[in-house]
Length: 206
Image (cartoon, rainbow, N blue to C red; front, side):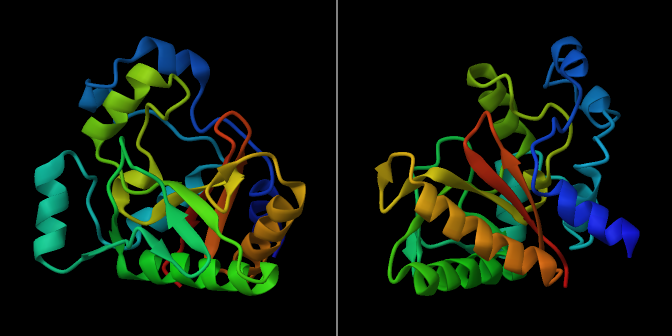
């Protein structure tokens, strides 16, 4: 019980996934080195949850296509009840079925709580190649393995609602209320990322 409460509490604060020192010393294209990078205790539950779906690390487009063709990955619509997906330059709109369904549940609940407003999904599934490209423009992107590399994580912006980029404390509070509900239900883990202005959400194999 104490461990569970710690994980829930830890989900409400920002913490680095991997040490900054490690990020600076290992190039992202060195896969053997990347696989050895240890996650923080805050982030480890996200990785453990990701690995429980039986998806292997997504290295490149071919690995994504394999899971699409065998029915393991499902397309995320550009919009749904309560959410919109922004233009994805460094990720792909595919996730395992449970992650897709959970995103839709979060969107529907947010829409109900806010009487029709929408939040913005800013990132979905990434391959290691995508992550390497992302690090060239964003040094805060994870060097080590990310839960995004397994197709069950996504990010939701907390400064973009109804397709408008603007700080909106009322909408942010409503979004966090919804995320807390699903975290307490054992369906997700989430971390509030200060530098990226988003919630990083990992769906559990509930």
